[in-house]
Amino acid sequence: GQNIDQPTEMTATEGAIVQINCTYQTSGFNGLFWYQQHAGEAPTFLSYNVLDGLEEKGRFSSFLSRSKGYSYLLLKELQMKDSASYLCACLDSNYQLIWGAGTKLIIKP
Amino acid sequence: IAGITQAPTSQILAAGRRMTLRCTQDMRHNAMYWYRQDLGLGLRLIHYSNTAGTTGKGEVPDGYSVSRANTDDFPLTLASAVPSQTSVYFCATSGGSSYNEQFFGPGTRLTVL
Image 1 (cartoon, helix red, strand yellow):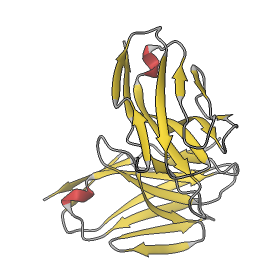
Image 2 (cartoon, chains in turn purple, red):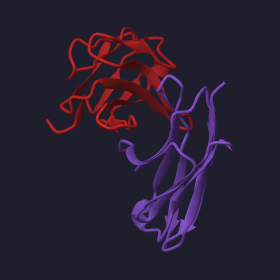
Image 3 (cartoon, one colour):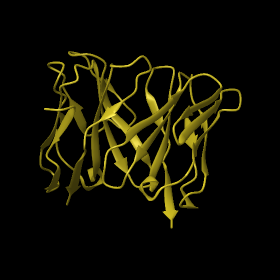
Image 4 (cartoon, one colour):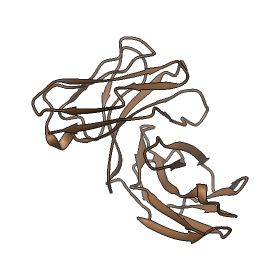
């Protein structure tokens, strides 16, 4: 079966660094996405990885290891506005997105 | 219109009633999707359409139907609503980038009593 696992909830302090992990098992793999979703809003795209390695985009970075079925999203210099859910999703062999349940990130002052 | 619009924003519906959720895009994207999002379960694909005139079933299609008469519109119909269909429904599109990034509408919050 297809499965994506990520922690349900994480707490971090403003100004700190947090790493949100995602492990996946899918039928075929055509890339991994991270989306951000603020409460009551639609998901918005953060990053896409299809090759192994680290992709950096400002305060956010995303890492992928295809051999380990593993990705993480790294958020630096946390701000209160980063409080949101972070969704991991994999593009399977049919180019359909398989979604994790999301990680709710709580930022404390 | 800018991007993806969904209507209504929210709706309370009696069980057994028929309901159509509307989704319209002006991004000229070929692919469109309907998801439902429930607490603790993440986004689940209901139906999708890779191009106008074609549709396909996702992970949870039962009780829902779709049509894709043109590029811009992708309505989702609940023929006879049941309380388990209470959820937040998101329409999404893709096709503008090389890696199938999906763009989401603002969502419809549906409550079936």
